[in-house]
Image 1: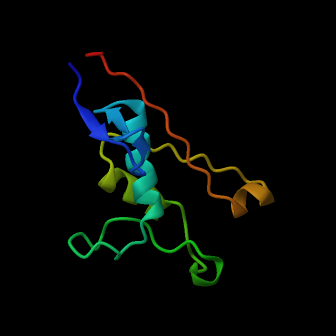
Image 2: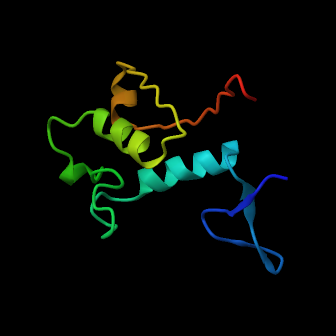
Length: 107
C-alpha cells in the first residue's frame, strides 16, 4: 500500500484533508512548487531554502536560472531540472517551470 501525504496547498475534500501518494508525480511537483514559491531566507530553520526574489525591482542585473535550478535540486532532490534556454525576448521575461517524472529501472 502506498503511503499518503497531505496535499499542498493544504485543502479539504469534504471533511478530510486532501492527500497525494508519496513519491507520486503530484507530490514531487508540489515539492518543486513549494521551493519556487518560497523566498530564500523565509524559513528560519533553513535559510538557504527557496529562491531569491524574482520581483522585477529586486532582480540583480546578472541573474541567471542557475540559482533556481540549484534551489530546486537542493529543496526537492527527487526532481530533475532541465534548463531550456529559449533566446526569444518574450521567453527571457517569463520563468516557466515544468515538472516531468521519469520512472527509473525499478519502476
